[in-house]
Length: 277
Image (cartoon, rainbow, N blue to C red):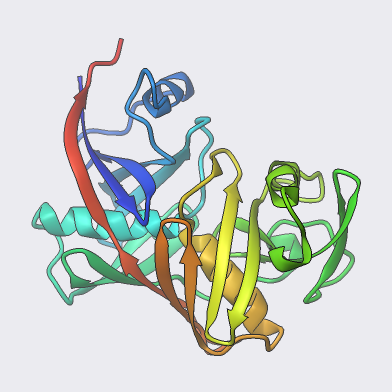
C-alpha cells in the first residue's frame, strides 16, 4: 500500500509521496501504473518529498513524468510541494525556504496556504545548457518540424523549452506540431513545446505540450520560459500574466542578471492509498 496526496496547480495535477523517512522505491513500471487515469490514480507528474542532499536546503523533491522518465524541474509542482510541506507543519506562512530540485535549489515563500511565490533562478539561453543543437546563441532559431518551417525561442528553466508564437499558426497545427517538436532531434533530452499568443506587453496566453506527459492544463516552467524568451526580445514588460488552460500565473523577470519569480496557486484534491500489486 502507498499513501499519497493528490494535488494540482491550475489543473496540472500531481501525486505527492512523503519520502522523508522512507526512500522513494517505485520503478518505471510502477510509476506508469500509478499514472494511468483509468486503472491507477492519474497525474501529469509524480512528486516525492525527501531529505535534502544539499545542506543549504530544507527538503529535496523528485519529479517523474507519466511515462516514468525523470524531470529536472516543475514550476506548478514546486508550489504544490511548498503547500504540502505547510500542511505537514514543516513550512510556515511567509517563510522563505530553499528547496532542492533535481536541477538545483529554488526559494519558495507561501503568501497564503494556497498561494506560493517561487524564485525559479535565472533563465538559461545558452544552447549547450538547454540542451539544443545550434551554432550560436540567438533570440530566434529556424527549425523544421514535421515538414513545417518554424521559428522558435529556446530556454531552460531547469528543463528545456521551445517557445513559438501560436498566432502565426492556424487551425489544428499546434496539435500536430506539439508532439513532433517535443521529440525533435535537435533537443537531445526532448523539449517542452510552448505555443504563445501575445495579448499585450503584460499579458500572454500559453499552451504547452510537455515531454513525457503530453498536453497539460498548465506548465509553470513553460510559463517562465515563454515570458523569458519574449522579455529577452523586448516584446513584454517585466511582470506578465500568463493565461494557461487551467488558469493564470504571474511571472516577473527584470532581465539578464536577475532571477525570475513565479506566483500562483496550489490546491489539494484528496488523500488516498494505492493498492499496488
